[in-house]
Image (cartoon, rainbow, N blue to C red; front, side, top):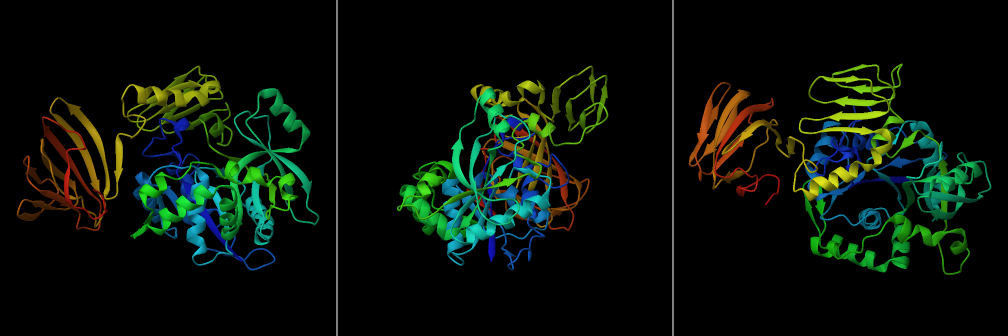
Length: 492
């Protein structure tokens, strides 16, 4: 039996601003340990191989991400030494049903009977053994043509999640016990959530699914033929690009946007399953594994360890007479006095201070930043690139200063600027510089000057990271003043 992990890494995670940004979303963060949420998701099935009554083989995970994040995703997988299948690139977000369809098309080329395990990249699961048990319980059902989702056993009334109503349990001795999926329920108000939890018949909707690739294609074609047609065209007209597979942009943009829940699952309730027109049954397996969608600062507070005062402190923090607060410092000393139930998150360019009760409203700050035409919702001061990164150090009228790090063996594009000149000072490593018709090396404490309009390239030929200070000067210093002639990473 082949289980094909499919990891959906397309979210933006605006409710974890200012750590999470549009171009560096929450799945790329490591809020709970050494691994990022993406890396932990890939790692979650690493020791499931060979478990269960039947031999199980875990295929290399298939990652689906937004094209904007492609190099960050590939680099995180490389850093963690995690093997993977191609990274499927979505030119635009179209929700989870089209993403699952692209994955099924890819998987069905070689193994249509393979069982896709579809997981969001930005969830946290603390009890991996309990998760494995649930996966094994669902694998046999999926192998018989069923579609399985996993419902989180609720530990409190929660108005921020959708719910799943359990139907009758399947006969047998599987643990956890699979049930017929009777109904999906929208996010309830507080009294309704309390009634759901008290009844014991409702679970939180996790967004994790299992089914054979061919089962998904049959059902998406039955219930949402437009999604299947658009995804087939986009995939068939796509092309390989190194670690990536690029689907055809025009075809995918025309695809209807819909979730797995709405597109297929809600059509597969117990009532629908009894119809002669329905070939597939939906099932739900209870999952009690320390799950969190890490959807807001308040949810992160539920899973991180606390000190004797109930505080969660990360970074250079001094907290006095403070209780039940989350305080994160990324770049400097953060001192807190007399805080109760407060969230404080410090980054290089922004600081969030909020009461825990308002944690869900952080997205309103992001909306305001967009409205004001600012960029703090999009990027950090440290900007990641496929060749390394750069960080803005200072900026004024007609100049800015950056710290640039180029990875070993990497190179920037061969480029030119119309409006700015650049001074490069190497502080560590050796740089290979192309300037016009010249190519030469500069080492630590040496520098060079690139005039306006001169074609140039920066490379790191060494085995260690190259670090330099770049001083830009000119009438316009925007990142769009780049004319690329050659690029190793396929950028325009």
